[in-house]
Image 1 (cartoon, rainbow, N blue to C red):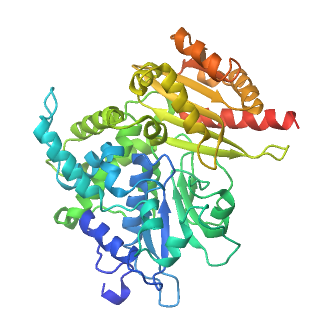
Image 2 (cartoon, rainbow, N blue to C red):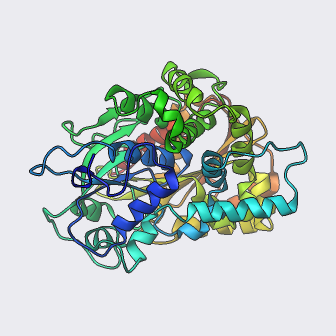
Length: 470
């Protein structure tokens, strides 16, 4: 393919992923207007699944030959849905991503039971920092002086200026969600600035992306969205297996990257219930042989999982709440706009209390998080891990929310909620600070459930309660 036919200049399928990202950055931060760009955007929790789905889809979509000079031939740009985080902080805020990318590019050194030495760990963290600085966050698009003007304007925070309706929108393909959500941009500005041209997702259908969009894949019961992305790329013959691919580092690296979120989200294909599907198993069977003879899938899983579980040690409380967080806007019949926010945390409330410097400090941090910015929360939820058990906690800041958690409890049979009475001191402090009817914590009896099941239940509860109080 000569350069005139190339969608992304200097790119070829099988190119190593760091060179690929360098080429993407040259396009995005070129200060020119002539580039036709489509953003591929994961959800605001910005976990491994979201990040690597966007990366994988862009890599293969950019390898598609141009249709003709008379058709749009966009360059596909993967963007991390992080409006307040610079790429230089990713090594600390998403350490498991650093391990995944380093494993894809360099391979991983097998870990002893005691873990790496302090010297080795520092060297690995520096390498992770260097690798992750090649990625692009919303924060960088909004703040880099060299960002393409159309992208800089589209991703500017809503409090900088309000957008009016325009036909000059930026095209977006959503992965790992099917209704756009950006913490720094309100819903009206999202609608005015962006055109949703596709989605691939494994969450509940939101009916936001047009039915005629391509791709448009929304399928429940799949452990990892990356499985759907990989299956899609195989179905349209963009991702194939060829003997010649063994000599091209990009195929090995991209296979390792794509494998990572599937293993993490399905617990190495050992997760119970509907957290792992035949689609997940099929994609692992496709990807695993392409990762190279010197690559240990089990070691990848263990090192990424360890990085994820230890990641909170490096963060302050507001970063912990925001690390794996999604918010939802509900519009009940009384005309109010009510926000729900749910954070997933790999530690329990006891650990969070200690990390915050005390139980009262934890409550203060919860209130600070819920009441900051334009999207003040009616309900703030935390889904925590306590060994093999899970806690479900809701803190509410209005009458609608208080009634919604009662409705949630009555309708949440699928979660098998059980009474929680682990910390009477924390309970008493919450009663005094927030009010006894404005918070509730349960044990989740069915630990195979996650935010994918919790969020629709509390959203429905809030909608119904608010409408009933019109």
